Image (tube, rainbow, N blue to C red; front, side, top):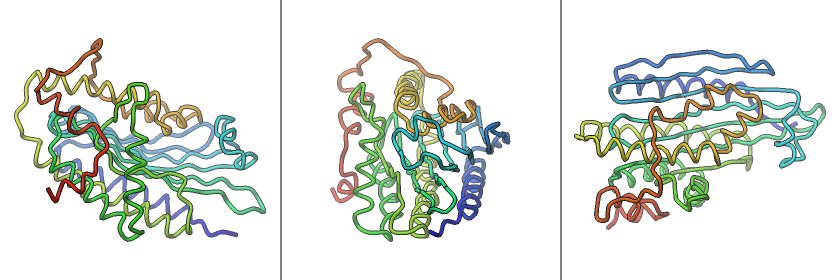
Length: 306
């Protein structure tokens, strides 16, 4: 039988949640509210939310581990090899919505799925990544974000970062608007080659590099002055975030369809948001610069040499 260490993955994810929360608390000065919950159909999780902090207007760092005797039809229709198998899905998912519009929103997720059937090898895979959604981006910040992502990928082959960077650009895209959600990062899914240990090591490399990528951006931008104009644009851009999560995000849809805990799934939504009919940025404004210079797939690492 194939080697799959489910308990090692779970222990890592629980430790990652604690490490990230502890560091964010030290930056904000406020403590995450923790709530443990159980899923009636099997499993549960540990939700941690921080609201109305000095740095973080709303942030959540969730651990979940759900399991059951069978997957919903929506899952087995796409993956017929999973039919008739019990399943376990676990992961850490986080979204940080900073108060200051100059500090970018960030999202990260690392997860593991396994489906088992007596007498047969388990079907398993890893997934995850992280991406950055600035309102008022700085080129050096975006370059740093991608430099850390590339460094995390390098031990696993030169093709890994370009492949998962491209996948991130394609995945975090609002198809109904033909508009990127942000400036990308990494995205991978269905990772089950060459072996369990290698794939698990890659997931850990991604999870462990998130704070290295994000914390310097917080520290550089958190004290920049802002006013009502910047807050209004932040609320408008958060509307795009909501649209993506509710319409396109696979994790959100899987959680809701599989009977996950709604409060934990939707903790990723921002605290304040607005929409404006056919809104367009003022020509030549710093808001327009987001659209003209940053909301497009680019080789950000090449920018470091310019």
